[in-house]
Amino acid sequence: MKVTNTIQSGIPGVSAAPFALRSLLRVFQQEDLNFLLTNRIPRRYATLFMGFWSRIESPLLTRCSIAIWQLFADDLALHEAKRSRFQSLQECFTRELREGVRPVDEDPSVVVSPCDAVVGAHGRIVRGQVFQAKGFPYTARDLFGSDEIADRHEGGLFVTLRLKSNMYHRFHAPMDARLSRVRYLSGDTWNVNPIALRRVERLFCKNERAVLELDLEQPGAALTMVCVASILVASMEIHGIGPVLDLRYDGPQVIDCNRSPVHKGDELGLFRSGSTIVLFVNGPFEVVQGLTEGQTIRMGEPLLRRTDIRVERKRRQ
Image 1 (cartoon, rainbow, N blue to C red):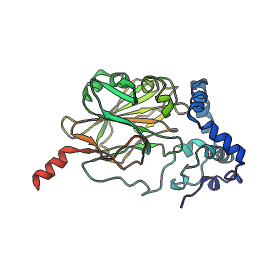
Image 2 (image 1 turned 135 degrees about the vertical axis):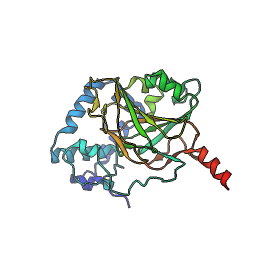
Image 3 (image 1 turned 180 degrees about the vertical axis):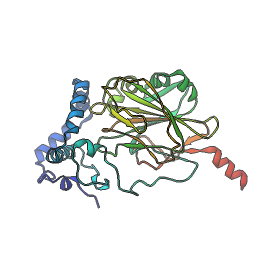
């Protein structure tokens, strides 16, 4: 049974919003208008203001903000959260989940989704080219800001994972690994919704982003996660590196990490709101059967599969 968050927010009458208001909200949710509203405003200042607003600690203001948020996103699943009440909107955005609501596939051949997301463009990297949408290519070199990382993933796979604002905003290790470096690239804060990806060339390469380099045990294999911020987000926390990465960050671009090995499903960090992760992997991997653009996937569910383990199992049989 679906649990509505309007009841949890404590704001009476929101779930019974007048028909005219609900109709108006549906108009604002249309992609063309949404694109104009979010990408024709001062994106940097709107993002900085949202960061300020979301950090205000006021239970009443937070309940009102969540209630308004739910008018635009009625599938906000707060019943999965560890806590039912929040001191600030940021606490709601970055909420932890109750134990067991995101089981992680334990099959050693499976690479799991690092986050809750809508699956976007995915496929194989050919001559350094990646796609954000059909007919809208960009280069891995521009996204990574590094020839070395781009060369490492040539011929490998990429999967785009878009986090909607109402989704769980923490991201996790897709397989056993060690976080070796984080490369921070400052940039713009374009909206990353589907219509923007079909209109703004090289959008991911323009936005603020953090490139997480993960060392794997498998010889010749490599895994990189690119966390791309968007409008009203532009704030990421990577556990173990210290500073928050946002529009005010002026530290070193490359941050060496000395983290202990992380296991599949361990939390790596969080966004302050919805955004995108582009996952790159090179080596003996393939996309799981049935993965399609537009489907919703949850953290811990199968995303990729190691083919060398499958071959080895057949040999043993």
